Image 1 (cartoon, helix red, strand yellow):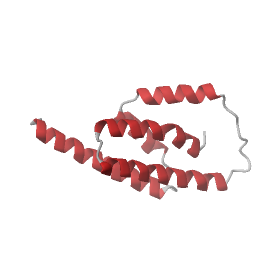
Image 2 (tube, one colour):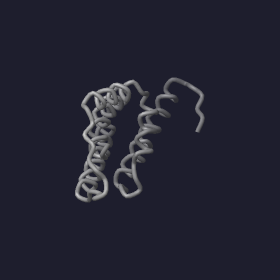
Image 3 (cartoon, one colour):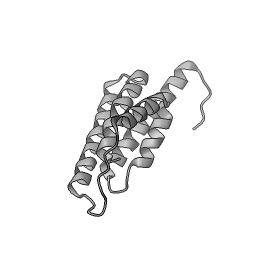
Length: 121
């Protein structure tokens, strides 16, 4: 599956999961930065097709099944799977992911302090 297609499936799920946890404008901006970085990486990938690789048409039901499976993942597992799919060539996407992860980490620490929960760093 192409990088752009994966982004098109994952980003709406990520937006919903992040906004359900942290509805701050900063979180929304970070998710949009990640979406833009993925979009740019997908555009770069599409402009440099591999001549030996044939394009395989996949039925839509597989994409729907993937969408349902990804939607059932926790935010943590979804972010882990996204981190694994970011290639070294997509530096902006990796940087945007790091910023989002750092923000969510700080958000969870603030909530833990508010609730008086013991913290592990």
